[in-house]
Length: 325
Image 1: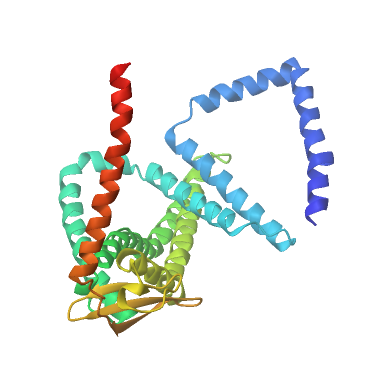
Image 2: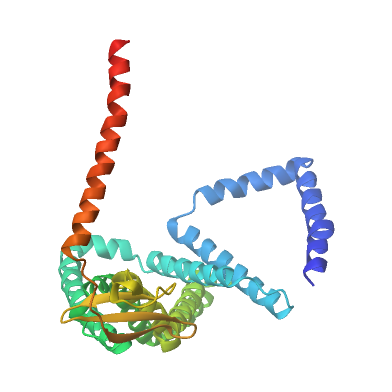
């Protein structure tokens, strides 16, 4: 199927596109028509640009879905990119449609105060959830893993923002969709009443579709992120990366690749063992690091001093030779 699709593009679509471009270049009327429309596009507002971007991303998303049904499945990253672009362009168009920048400029002080209070609450909740996550995923005390506390707090802060905004938009979307639907019907009725039968109602319909698309995509991503199969292995990998740095030989265990330990008080340590499904498993073990005796330390120091003396003796003749020259 992929080979047939490639042949269709190479020997069907591209020759037709190049032929149409040559036809336009050879026709003065068509060039004037495109020039007029190009000037009209330059005069567009931000609302019209964002609407065009939203329509283009939506078409690309539906095209990828059609290819999937035909057996040509895009890569997961391509699907995520198209979903993200569709969601971002939909939100951008809604911001322009509702004139959010003007509202922000008019009520900037109040919004900043509210946003600051919410940010403090999100930071507090993020710290609480990071400690709870460490205790749940590792079975260890969060205070024994300060690096993991710091990293999980950093990771959970934008995650909580995203989930909260997604749920907020999900709750608000239903009355907004109803309002946009009835307003679109009312405007269409008024246009017909005043004799504007060809009046365009595209912006209202596009706003209705944009709300639906944005909410569906955001809630789908929220469901994916909130699933235990998604976040559990990734958070365990983050905990192992942040706090488990020492090899197993530190506790007198055989050297095992990929297995690390985190030392704790009272001759204890936590060990992180890689797992295919769970990411990592954590256990608390007895750990008594082997301390070197005074004789071994003296031998190491003497060896270090002898190496330094040899280095100095090797450099001195070279410096003398350079001085003579």
